[in-house]
Length: 339
Image (tube, rainbow, N blue to C red; front, side, top):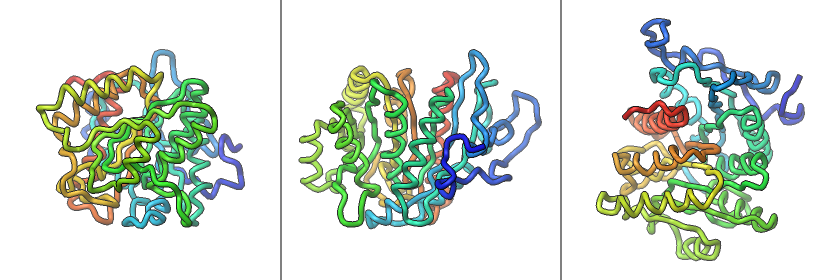
């Protein structure tokens, strides 16, 4: 029985292949297990997510194996392979979260260029994950993941529309051109839908680069009331200002959708992205303080990692960086991160 995906849309969904999650094994005792030993793959086209026992939290991973939006945006394609690379990079993490649930809900795929159809399936799946009581943590795929992910959260949240925190070198506020919506249009699309519904558009962009955004995009940000902090502020001397701005934004919103485009980082740390930046952020203690400020707010409604492109990765640096962010999300959501 199909649970959430209509039969005519099943081409856009793939359960995770057997053998995807594998890695080091130190034993089967609870204190030596790793993620690949405890994660539960679920084919959500035929089975609902497992019910969560009382007092237990759950996270559902969902891949978006798509870079059609990157292609439309004239970027380097290859991010469709990102979800698999990210799963493999996460597989051998140790289990520090006890009996809380970790589920793999498979991939939404886009192999026929029909981005809008794939985004609709992704939105419906995110909504299903939230209704089942799990936190959606999505693996991209291009940053066209943002429009679909946020829409799924918005549909579930009802009157409590999520504030958006985006770690990114780009605003992604372009208006769609003749090629259609893409990886650079997601937040413009969200803003238009919010306006049509009479809902506020609260968007905080962190790590914006002046050399990556045209004056028109800065003007669009001003017109739409976007708050942003440029990459140049990510220095220790500005730490109090950064954390204060993030905390103030969180207080304005009932819940938060967190999205991280890996091109926000310097190319030395993240070479495997669609649009590398030589002078991006460094994933140091300052960045982690900012990232954890969102994670520890108690308002997280969903998170994703976008633009992992294994075709251009070097020594899996980008995949390992992305995996470390997933680890942060999981551990902070389960409130078991000690250091």
